[in-house]
Image: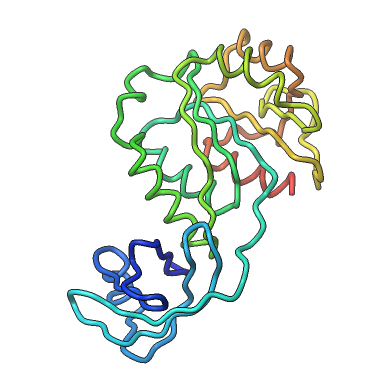
Length: 235
């Protein structure tokens, strides 16, 4: 945790917060902070600043906080991601949030197991927690928007075509003939498939609405590794 991320519900006065639970435990056990110490803080969906610990014990921590800086700019990226295995989902959401990706669409695909959609890790509470963990790591405060699409066609065939104007649309495909570009300056829509990739029919659908298939080297990477590699290359 490189940032103590605060919510409006944490405030007990205009400039004073009280924290318990996960953030308190991290402050005590990892940061080993004590009364009088100054921590880097941020207000969720707001500014960055600092907090001075006035009281801390095993039950709660109170800080006086002030905010004076903007969070880092978001990447102009909308990520279209085939729903991964539940145990991978947490890592991907936290990683995407830490990279500054502003929008995430989790979609269905032929190779996505139906059971994945029933995972409790898709709950709004868990997705928010994983996003928060990513923000705390990166020193950011702005949550990405996350949308769930249990059907492939309504999003890809019906919604996306009207939303791609003025944006670069790329489909990650290790079998593509074209290399992924570098230093993209326009808003980007990036689609990444499930393990084994999108099937041919799904690839054709993306291609038909304006996506360009791109490769990122000779290796077949795990989804979370491919995401980090692509964002690093593209920006």
